[in-house]
Length: 500
Image 1 (tube, rainbow, N blue to C red):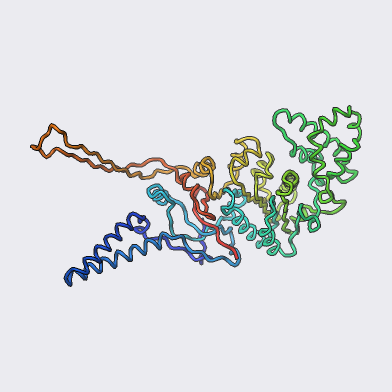
Image 2: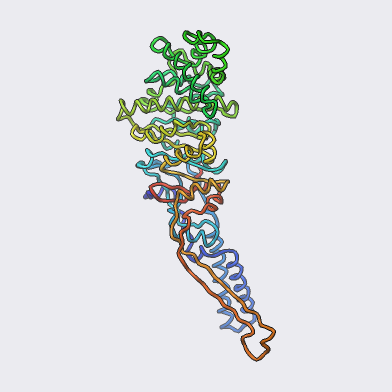
């Protein structure tokens, strides 16, 4: 963790070590002591009255102090994210070490420490960031904070927003100025046009991008392979002669099949192409089929533009997901060419909200092979189960999580999701304190001749055990906008600031 000096956000002091151990039961007992001292002060002589009054005053001040220390720290909204050389500002927090874990285990609630600015070093950004958490816990706010800092650096920025968050769009547009470009499915009149299959380095990429939208499990694999063959045949026919887009594919593959596709039995051909028909029909719209020009990743990179994909998944989830997936595959192709031929340009930032809506198995390759090309990925998702459903297996979902060296975890609703971050944080030796008591009542045959009619034994033991550094229940109880984060082998606890 890097600590800024001077700190752009005032630090929040941690409570005194003695105050951290106070809970409601301790306060009640101290309050009873204060009341007894006050009562004694009313009836006692001068010296005793003075001592009792002082004791009552001290006890009262300690109660007030413990209550103040137990409150959540106040927060002043930031006018703009701080600009930091060498890192990204995540918010305020502290490093989560064994003493914090110890206190959390013993008290049953997350501990607090002195909060300072949490800065994610630039060295970690090329290794990608994954933000997880249930709905409404702060993921989009953190994403907004990071996007605005990337825009302020003057870098090329790409934002995929499947739902179409109007507040995030307005902030990014305002911060970007003339560099801003919008692609919007719900508002085509305000959108730039973009052909996600028109640029490639190998003509087979066109078939790969379209086939990635087709189901591939079980019996569907044969239909996917047939669809790939159809698209590849058309793409080879058009290569070097005309621009390839979804409308051209639909006409040449389905409406009026070209040779040799038209030589196949019509009924069998349409049956095998049944999975391809709805995909091409949904994507054959003017916004995705510009006659010339349109959005180009090479232009975005060279001019350091900010591109915002507002996809409106609530209006049409299948179409928005298909556009996002093909666009990511198109970007992956460009990143590969950039790594080979255009080294030396500045970083490209890729921000993805609702990762489960756009992820494909090829996304794993983008994560683990894009570091050398300067692509920095920040992705938000709700649960590991969402990734598992999109990718078709838990192993692939864990691959995505494992390829992000920085993980930020907001509150998790389910035990398995909380366990993912807890296991990622590892275990440490923690001091476990236990107490035992045993009582032996009097026996009827003992009579009254001995004092052994009642026995009691009390014992205390302290030992060291392996325990999760971040217990799963601590992840499940995080307040809104609070998070645990892990990078560079360390764990931090913090919260995202408010922006005006």
